[in-house]
Length: 463
Image 1: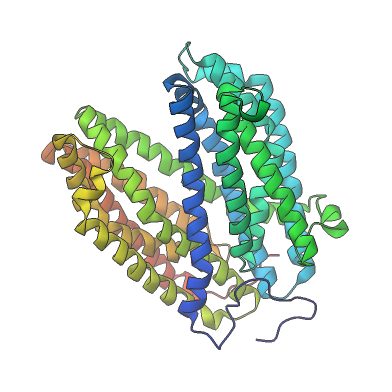
Image 2: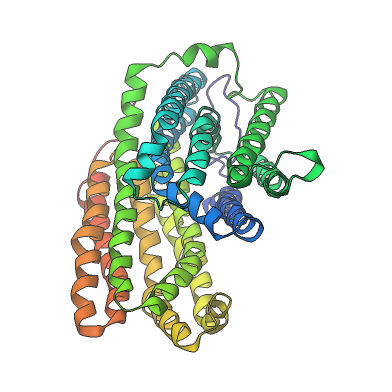
């Protein structure tokens, strides 16, 4: 495909006919999957440092703020989803100015949103924690952590948004490099502030937030310098700064795509709260098993989620380039990779299930519960990945309503009720059965809408 004048390729080129499409997918996927792993590892390290170097109360103080932080990031995930699709479409069309216009609008919106969160958070963090029922012995530490976490929002939000811009152009490698930098800096700075190394102040529970501010702030600055030095079309320049004056039409389109995605993330989390309430009825062993298996499942989900994101980005580029003839190939390639990569991971987990669960659990009874959970649910994450691909491609055209409704219905209309009903017949195993049942339903719903409606439409650029 001829590229529009002035728009050079930044990352992998989905229109490169010299390479098979599956290889282009894999080249993009590897840094994206590793980025997800790094982000999880970074959060785990912070928790380890708090728990080991300060104590359980410090870990609890940070955990108490998690529900609010998660809601904010659910909103941000939605905005990022919408901006990635618009940038992917503009980039596929070779429209340099439109790419920067979308990036500038989203940067301006996320920066403004970060400032509002910082002000509101600092003013009302104490009240918020009291409403959440935070235990009195940790509320002071939670409040201190929350205030810093809110204050750094104007830096963290635009940085995270900027990484999604690059991915929308097919470049998953550059964000990955700078995520390595921020992760390493965070792993060094967090214990340094906790223990007061090198003459640094001892900041206690706030150390995680301050280390996050410095590590991500430094990484963001280096990231922007790198874009400038390589003359990247997405570099922050005068045009981008002017475009930070929000374009209402672009922002509305981003929100129209992104808000349903953010709502779905929240609904998934609320469903997990409902499920854990069912699990808790069977005692602490069942709860421990649930927590351990979630650790394993999170790593199995990474490839599926990453393949869905990739399908969405490549689908958006095809629509922007008016190459709808390639959308079928994108779906087939993504679904195939989901079953190959996910299948290998799941097979390994089945083969070594006892040993893997044994990393987290030593009690034989709890180990048996966790093993049963894996045996019942793990295979169905292949269906979860399949539905993520179809949902991602449909979202690439701006079709978000029905994929979101399908996803929420499968969770709240199928998974939660099934788990509740079946636990009365099959005990704790009945709770686990809710997952594969809901994954079967959602993949059928997404496939039905994709085949009967979405495929038959003509898809145009959104802005």
